[in-house]
Image (cartoon, rainbow, N blue to C red; front, side, top):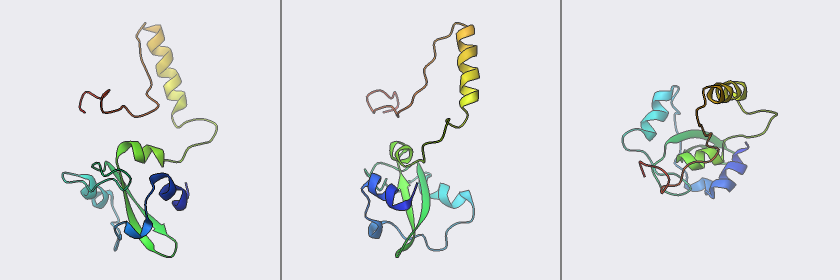
Amino acid sequence: MQVNDMLQILGADPTQLPTALNPPARAEGAFARVGRTPHPCVACGKPATATRIADIPGIGPRWIDTCTPHMIAITKTGGTSAPGSEALTTLRAAARQANVDVALLTTPLTEAECPRG
């Protein structure tokens, strides 16, 4: 997904995003942003569970911190099949054979639906 498309979906002003000077070379740097004291989601202000650095034309590298629903909203979609769809098909067949009820969530749970709130 293009950076401008992400920002439009999130309703984020790129000039208000935190500058990502000296971006971390490893995942530890990104984890530090969403660890014990996560930064707020740029779209809704809830604690971020994901982050990425985007090089925004004319502005430079910026952090895009997102909660899970907004991270999903800006995740690239498309193609002929979802990643791991063969594995899901196999799991679904095994569950049916074992007579087990299963559900695949395609959207995040709402706060009311989630037992953890």
